[in-house]
Image (cartoon, rainbow, N blue to C red; front, side, top):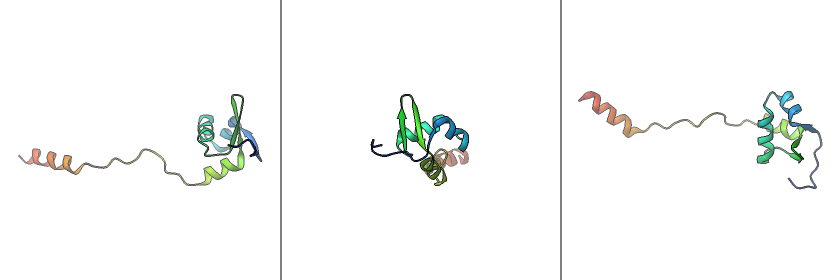
Length: 83
């Protein structure tokens, strides 16, 4: 984040986590990735609450990617059962 950018509604990661029912580690990860507007002050992050709120309201895919079935593997197991 460029230094000239200011945080309109600064809150700590702990406060953000409590308000939005997520972990402080998740908030920190979003800040590091640049997904939300934040500024690091020493060891702590100050989060722009409006940026976090906007991010959390946006739908995101969750969970692991679905496994694709291997059609060759299914065929070979069917042949072994029939023989």
